[in-house]
Image (cartoon, rainbow, N blue to C red; front, top):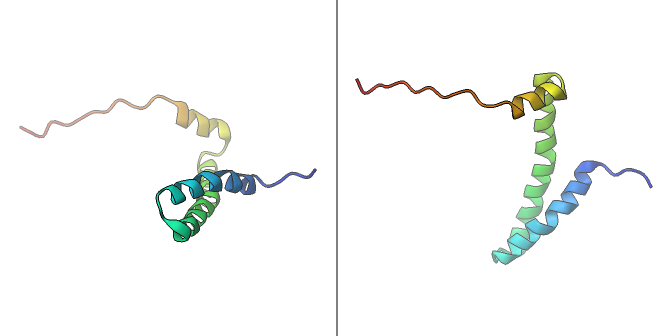
Length: 81
């Protein structure tokens, strides 16, 4: 068996719940069509954003370090004076 591209598998996994939600909200066939378009856009855009982030950080370890590092402490400037 040959490997399927991950985005096709993700599309078919995500379209089921999206179609059920559209039908449960009474959106009918128009809602189903919109759900298909939205899931298609998500499946295309999310990997593209991930690739852009990977180009910005250079490698996965730098990207994961950025995501998992604790946030910097927030400082607030008192402007009431």
